Amino acid sequence: MDVIVGIDLGTTNSLCSVFKDGQPKLIPNTHGSFLTPSVVGLLEDGQVVVGAAAKELRVTHPDRTASCFKRSMGLDRVIEMGKQEFSATKLSSLVLKSLRGDAEDFLGHPVEQVVITVPAYFNDNQRQATKQAGEMAGLKVRRIINEPTAAALTYGFHDRDSEKHLMVIDLGGGTFDVTLMEIFEGTLEIISTAGESMLGGEDFTDRLVSTVLKKEGLHLETAEMTQPVRTARLREECENAKRQLMTEGKSRIRLPDEAGTFDDSKVFKLNSAVFAKIVEPLMKRIKDPINRALRDGDFGPEKIDDVILVGGATRMPVLQGFVTDFFEKEPLVTYNPDEVVALGAAIQAALIGDDAAVDEIVMTDVCPFTLGVEVAKDFGGRVSSGYYQPVIHRNTTIPVSREEQFGTMAANQQEVLLMVYQGESRKVADNLCLGELRIVDIPPGPAGTEILVRFTYDLNGLLEVEAMLPSTGKKFNTVLTNHSSSLSSVELKAAVREMQKLKFYPRDELRHRRLVLYSERMVGEVGSFHRQQLEDAIDVFEHAMTLGDRSVFDSARLSLLMTLEQMGVGYDEPDEPDEDLAGGNAAGGSR
Ligand code: ADP
Ligand code: MG
Image (tube, rainbow, N blue to C red):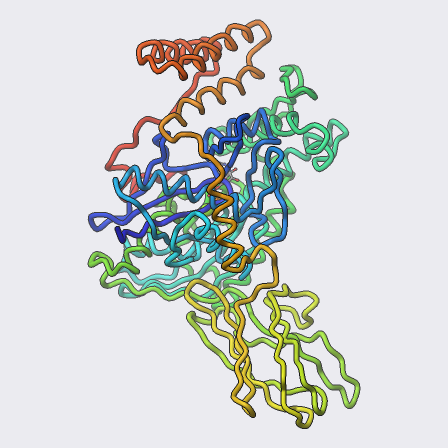
């Protein structure tokens, strides 16, 4: 089947979507939810669980789970899970595999092609890694698109006849993007993009955790190493407290002891003002990219017609308050900020698939950062290296291909090592090195022998660099491979084989396993008085899962659910989502 599925591969949550009957629709997972936590876990027997079940496991067995790995995409970082080592790319591919399974279940046929969204501010290494994660999951990645662009597509699709300037502010779990755009007669034109790929809602939670730990005389990094369960439980408390500020304006954080058990006498009181003070340094970092995107577009905040909030962390009152003050208007949250990117990915899939419903929509995007090479400068005979020469300037409309002319430094120079960078600084040391291109066999000639360098930045945001010696016509090109996270095709095949050895926990039983993992987490939450009764109910249910007797199973499940309920820690699993809700999600505004 040639249907293309859209995937929003988030730091904290991932979603899957499809364009159907003229509308983008979200695809529910086995738990009936559209949001799949981007958490991977290994059960005791080594089986892989992804999503809600892994999130439960993260609290009780942080050592056997991995989360927030999107932050390590494109880095040569090894992430330990259980006793095994993974790259962020591999962990992401497990999430993609799980979403693919959900899509195949929902659609009733195999899925082989995807559009994956990435933060606009993702660099070349991070984008390559994302594409390879798709390939490791056996998927053909038809397009990598920027998350704020996808969000804008959702707004543009439903409001295509309007004429306005929009600013999309996307604060997810781990990344921050700001995009300025114009909608005009069905044309969506991105004017400028700015952001930070290391700033998100998780940093706000981190600051809260670290503030509470400090009161106990502990540092976050040390506590994570020495008291992982305590830190994991405290993090869960802080996350909930942070979210509660949206509805209540205040909340309480219970402090677990070293074993992770809560003692209700130890409580940290939080309110919006205290929280604002704690996260002040982060809020300062939010302002810069907004100003940069406006400056690049030559805009003032007053020229923005609508400010669109995207990403779960834009629910924070402190963020909404800032945006309202800055733009002097209330932001728009017409679509659920968790879902709007995934819906846009489905619209992008429809554009690629030439669906008639998106006939009149035209979309243009930009390259979010400047790309260039290292050059040496000659100051009257004193040659100094380390300077940055841009080839493609930031916010150039893509796809773009630009050629620049360079010369050799010395007479009869045979080789040039072209270093490729991304960034805005004058010196390469302050920019990000993307890779290198070795130009060899330069024929003898004077200093200044011509070398042409061409940069091509495609619609996926991937860069190709090509050099040519006009004197010989010889060409050199590279897909930048500076990092080991970027695999050759042989390595990729080996990785796919390795991934296939990992066994996924059976999909149709995942809901039940999640209930067990949830209940196990609650063993640490309920008082010691109830503990035995809960453990007994879990034992009975777990045993019933292996028996294959429906009525025994149903009664054990019910009994476990009732036990949890009685203990005040009721399990609430979303029901099957309503078909109508999946289409467009127009009523999803969640302010
Ligand atoms: P990503 O796309 O990176 O996975 P999401 O858009 O799902 O991120 O947003 C996740 C982030 O949003 C998390 O850091 C979470 O703490 C935060 N978040 C979600 N709901 C709320 C809320 N009500 N208040 C504050 N933060 C929230
Ligand atoms: Mg997101």
